[in-house]
Length: 349
Image 1: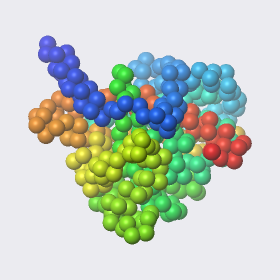
Image 2: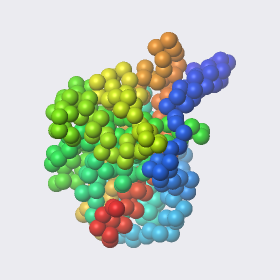
Image 3: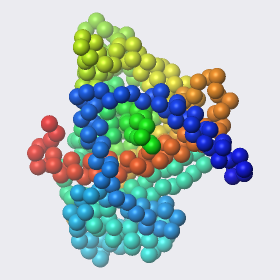
Image 4: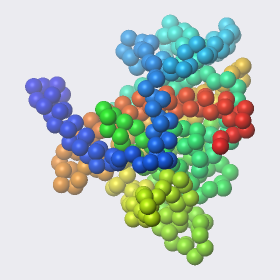
């Protein structure tokens, strides 16, 4: 739709959505959150360029990585990588595949935006020096130490060897607006295949997971009490303003509704899924990552404004996709930096 009224409609809809997003934004608290946002400031050093005419493929690197990497991809591995990227991206352009390998050889992150009617799927391939990673990638209760886009990660059923329900909060900025999004996620990993898959669980599954989780404190065994106590084990929920918690118990109860008992109506994300896969049969690691997210527009706008849902949904999805594309390379850089650093030091502090 690009008739005479499109610009006016887009502007009005954008204004409404931005105003709604502002309701989710908060002033930057001290301490823990300052540290998180300082970590994320590294996004300003991102350098990206198009490597195809349509701009669906990007080559991205950060300022402090320029000239840092030369993986010296040999002819045999070059052909293997081209075949791997051809299958993964569905790309049959030989010259473009050559560009991808050239850029990856220099340490660049190759990002592909696969647009579909129900949102964009983001796919990434990059090379990383051999390092330990499995323990930290699957340490679900502390993934924010690996990835700076997270403010917190709270495990709902810790201790399982191959899967976990988790509530996470991601944060990013769009046109100067800071947006924080709380999302329940189910992680499942397979060491033999070196994969970690994740998706947004059904509401009934989250309710069951909280019901079955062990209590953190003796005597506090109701699902809501267990959820609150699990959150309080994380620094994000331990911040104090004088004698009061910055995030009150009432706030955590709202989070409980949003991510567990009423997520279908209140969680701003309708669906999300993706995976990590690491190929180790090269002189380096070949890391692939995929992410797709669908917004829940009903959770973003008040009931009295639901008549705007059709107008707002497409724009909300565009903004969500734009934020994902913006911050995705930073998470990839986090993986590469931290796995190298922690392999040397033995792990995060």
